[in-house]
Length: 353
Image (tube, rainbow, N blue to C red; front, side, top):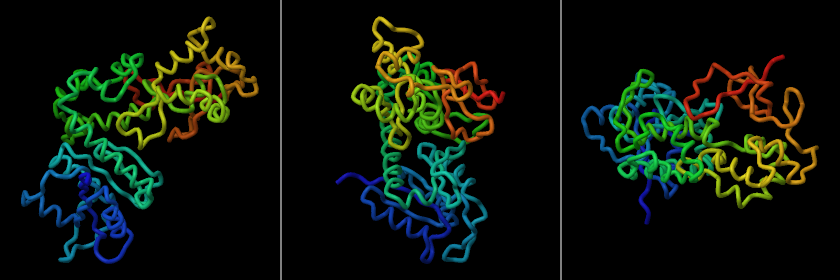
């Protein structure tokens, strides 16, 4: 029988019958998890006594901590956010998640915690699968730290295709250029929590590699690269090249808890090679016609309505960057509101004119 993922669950609503207690019970019924639940006052006592072992795959803390007493009538004065720093200090090698009933989105990322999940998503099978997948990925990273002694080792661990390795290495933060083995525990000006190298690396993967355009591209960007409209791309082109695109799909850690992504340079090279003698540095201008696609399905810039947009851009009022639209570089401006590190593409904002 496989070992269960041990989860420490901190909440002040564990007494009586309520949705949070039911959530803990449902997680414990899942054969993949072993959940140990504590009231925050009780866990602080255990920590102060020095009797809390470093045995957990993941720690989950209620974000709000509504001020409910424990069985002795004792109240916790801290909120869940402050507890994350306590656990980061105690267990720098263990990821800490927050859980919230008021979270609008299912998942968010933060500096002092590794992820925030909605209570609602964990009541679903998809949420429990996500939790199990994340636990497995954190465990895999922790187990491999001492074998990741170089940038090449990291690329191999993430199964980066050969022609995308250089782009990937350029995107790595300086602290990981020599691998995870040699990345010491650090305190930065922005984040004062002590974290092990594999936790910081996981945070970089989830905050940058899998969410920002650069070494990897998403479905919208892939459609632009092929020069066709998104819906047509999903129904026709992606289906036509399903086998080939599968080779370039990201399948490293945390792939299961994110949208599908593809290695940019590898896909670009493939599209250029498809063109043969028509090969060009701007394949999106040639590939639709080369594949015999009617121009009614070609991608158009959302601003000027001309063909051949080169990028995905966002409305200036869309602070969450949720609406992605194809556009020409000339019809956009580069946003200065977002910190984009080396190796990643800038955020393009649609010109308002």
